[in-house]
Amino acid sequence: MTNVLDTLKERGLVKQITFEEDLYELLGKESVSFYIGFDPTADSLHVGHYVAMMVMAHMQRAGHRPIALMGGGTAMVGDPSGKSDMRKMLTVDEIAANVESIKKQFAKVLDFSEGKALMVNNGDWLLEKKYVEFLREVGANFSVNRMLTAECYKQRLEKGLSFLEFNYMIMQAYDFLHLNKEYDCKLEMGGDDQWSNILAGADLIRRKEQKPAFACTFPLLLTAQGKKMGKTESGALWLSPERTSPYEFYQYWRNVDDADVENCLSMLTFIPMDEVKRLSALKDAQINEAKKVLAFEVTKLVHGEDEAKKAEAATNALFGGGGNMDETPSTELTAAEFNENAGLLQLMVKCGLTKSNGEGRRLVQQGGVRVDDEKITDANYVVPLPESGELLIRKGKKVFHRVVIK
RNA sequence: GGAGGGGUUCCCGAGUGGCCAAAGGGGGCAGACUGUAAAUCUGUUGUCUACGACUUCGAUGGUUCAAAUCCAUCUCCCUCCA
Image (tube, rainbow, N blue to C red; front, side):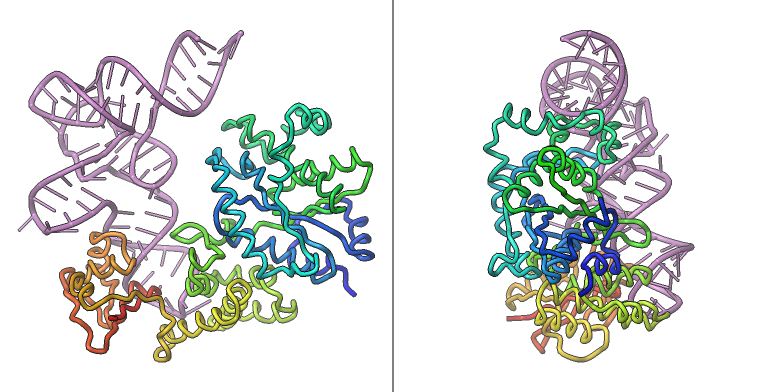
């Protein structure tokens, strides 16, 4: 049986490791409990977290036990890593609600049956902790001098770092220690931006418990341009269908840069590596085949096979011509509602295609709008009530929207 | 606590009495070219019942024919000193 570390490395899911040889050996001989922390700062996870979920899934398939840690306690503080500004503080209620909705998303990728994976919330042990007790127990083991040299604080030292945030690292380190005692958790994984926080925890265990503890990070999902992946005009690319529809999600991956195809296939899907290599080696227009596979596979993992098929069908109908349009994003209007908003500009706003009439006006004047495949250039165009009961508005080349009369 | 500097449109950043809906860049959107890619070029980027009108420059009041620009108070941020 292959060592999971080899699998992860092969797929580009390893960035830095401590005591690599020891860890390799450990993972090869026993089932290891490991954890990854997620801060519940929103009610849904996004693509950044998805990489972490894939890592956990690979580990679980190899027989190890993932612990998904919800940062109900640490979210109260806010991680300064990679942020140039201080985060907004969330209320206790907001955090609790976020934890609830995120839990469901994990179940899609991980198997929680029979204790094969655990989910814990660090609020359970951090929030009731006494300050002085904590300082004596944990704080004594940290050197401020060393903490300040950590990469994650460096840029913040120039812009300002509050004492609140400075404590984040210590709290996260304590989490690892706690899980080590409670669940024999020996490894903490995370995005590479978490490296210093993770090290702090592993060091703490080694120092206080005299036991081995490991850290392993995976690279952040970046585009070939070095930008964070998963940004859309409306913000992040979310995993919940309420925030990002499966169709939109599918389209995102269908449209990635050629240069990013290989990375995405290996990091975000379970497709065997030789197939990944074959697909990403395709040239010119052919690489679109690889993008179709990528989009389908990722959508399937996140939203399920049915939704992936629907998204694919909608795409074929729109871009391939003909076919079933049922899955195209749409808005239902009564005939009365339609007549009230029959002006093309109003109709587009009603469908969420544009934010204002002004935006729509520009779009129309620049030739970016088609109604039922007919280019409209008159901003005052009034759309006639369609006899067929529906019509298709197209904004630019890629955005399609159906209007259905109830 | 003391001294100084600052909050401008999605972001960065010009503007210090009328010519300012506000330079420039980034980002976004659209057009051309393409492969639903990238790069490039062009246009556009406050709102509206749109050749005109209305609302914006941290907040509230004031001076003025006229304020993003001047004054007062408040508020938030940054730097230096303690």
